[in-house]
Length: 621
Image (tube, rainbow, N blue to C red; front, side, top):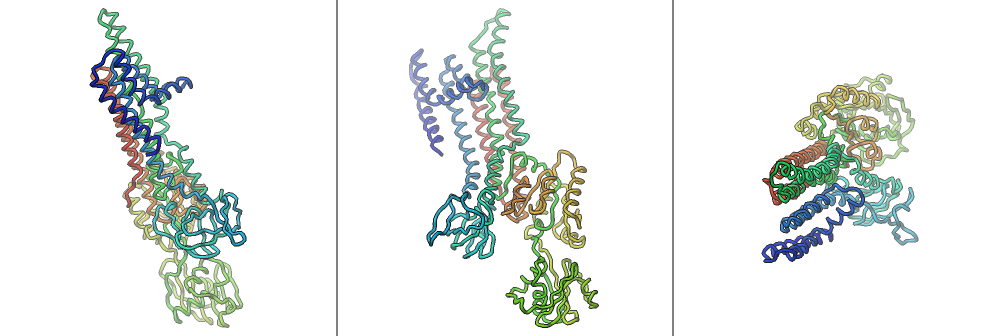
């Protein structure tokens, strides 16, 4: 508990003890009134103060006004115990609410702990702490073990492991060495490293994430907007209804010559007021969304607002970009076929011939070779656009490229029946074999698609710029039935728009991309999800939901979080309104007393709040 909650708790204990003691005190009249005012003011002075401020500010109809009128009215009627009890139990409900909000906020606060307090720079051999805002691009900063990486950059000295749990929700550390990019918000766990900054602090990953989370509460869902409007009209209506209940029946009774029974009808009106207090709805609905967003952030799923959380629960169509989403987006050598020379020799020739190119295929060959490349061994390099490269490696003629290059050189080559990019190799004019390079599936891609099917998705679609043969192979392997290949970025937007036109209006379409080159499609879909977005400005800016790592299983998890949150919201709406309607009818009929009114207000609120904080907890898939 914080200090404020502790003070309220102490007031509750004192009031509870006094209320029990005074209930058995044999005093009447003004003396009884005076002794009961002590616990009443101890427990209710802040509520009375807020009610008076509301009246002064012309914002009369809120729960503070309702509680003040109801309790003061009960005391005026001589129901001292009930008047104090109503205020006491109301404060107990408020304490529960405060605790629940605090618990939800702590998940956000844990994420906020990634904000760095300082950055270390080295001057004249000494380490100085400076404000991260003062660091310019290109500055070398020092990050010691146990400290947060304050700004995005590249490691120029040292190696370490980084804890990214606050960003991704994953506990597995990541290794970082010279040449590796590191992002702000990670915690340096083992070794001292020096980082050359590539961004200013205001543009760094940590700043963008914090802005996203801090602004998420400003984008309200339809349910929240409904409750806000509902309370705006509901509260004045029940106040006027209570006045009518207190005045109209006695006047009608007097007109027909019966006893007016003013005390009885005023008591019913006061009971009606307590029952009608909309706390359970006004508090629990926003709290449910806040808890959902907090629980999601703890799992490495950043939702930009409760409106997107609500929309995500209605998703029935999901469209994937292939590269970087279902696949790693990194080309790797996956096979060497029909080698006429030793495989390691074949790979060496291919790596050296391609060593001057920056193409991803060339880089994958050099990476697979795995040894330092002495480019002085390579001469007579000739790159043929769209076909490949020829060169001399140690004065041996080497050709590396596709089937077009082999035909140009008049060399017969073997066909490959595997799916991927084929690099044919010829040595001294003789075919030496071919190397298969492919984009690997992400480890959990197949499981993620299966989980999405279980969650009730009507259609799963994959879009890609790759060749049709490659696209169909990947789609078949992961379990996606609808696939569209050889698409340009504009074609992907057109395909998403086509799908949007065909689906029912109430059902939502989700597009999942890697966030780097998918911004147009992310913006066009009902909900854009960017995954693997650590360090990607485009992802954080364009998407509605940001998954902070590369795990496709975060997609069904995000949808499951949203569905659980919305389910809790509707449970609270139906429960709170249903109980209140029943109790209002009983109160107006004189069957319900103030104790039932306390349950209808405080009891319902406590149950709804406890239900709301369930949105914080998400089971693993």
